[in-house]
Length: 465
Image (cartoon, rainbow, N blue to C red; front, side):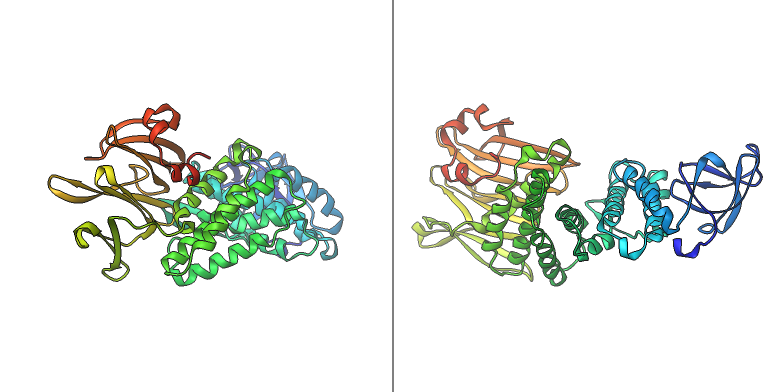
């Protein structure tokens, strides 16, 4: 947009600025202008600028104090860069900052261009996209700011996720940062994080396209040298790597390819995160990685030991896996059968001899793992499904944590994120009907957890992290 102008320019500095038909407060309002709008200045009269708005193809008058005159010659570049630095970390000023950044890119000679302005504009574009997806979604100011930056060459992608609209920056400037040899490690790390946001992977992408996309995201993150990064940025990078490697493990399992090495790498990256270094603002990134890795952790586990109760998997309808429970003591008699389109983690199967039951982890979605409970009653064998939460699937998993034979209680741990809130619960359920008996936020608050929690669960679970 800036290349089209050679006249005197002004950038609107406030929202809801009125473009009027005449230079007076009572004149007809022709348009509402927004911060970041770029105008051509043609004259000044009685405290008003006579301007032309090329985006709306309309002229009019704007108060002098509602805009700031800017130049786009080489001599103007230092001042524009100073304003860009001031605005880059000011929430709510993204459209204004991006406009000044675009003016700087127009003014600065190619020989002096560094990654700094590209990094700053990309950061503001990602923050604006986050506002458009979050609590400010649908707000008139945010929608107007998106229209402003679109005219400046900042393109957004949007798609539906979990019943809500997700808006994401397309990452063009992040890619340019990674292509610049002089970009610092911190700038490259921020660009890599911007290009690999899990929530910005289009859920409609099929398995054939998702595999190379995940490989590209892994390569981008692994290409960042973390040795000179701050502890905060190192932990952010490890958390993102954990999330991306977990997604790769799930994708490989869906394609019936080996996923164990991918899941182990996800666990290694997660364990390299120091949550205390992330601060309150970045804890969500760690929790996101924790839930994603927790959902696929069984991919890294060795095969389960066999016992009297045995599971057999066999194909069902196209894309389905059917699970049949057999009793070796009865000559392999089939007891119950259930089918799923999810991934059956056979290594998770744990028989509970004292309860005539068996538990199994099944993952229907990339970030959602359930617990199947095969158990016997007077009516025969049945299968019940325990989900991480009661709402529509977002992110979470449920773990078998042990069994208390004295009280006939099943011990489970749930970690889930619903409507943006993270929740961790430890529960005791009656094995015969899976009714909740007691629940707590920590296992030590439940007596049966202290005595009967499963040793393997305590060793491997992420719920105690």
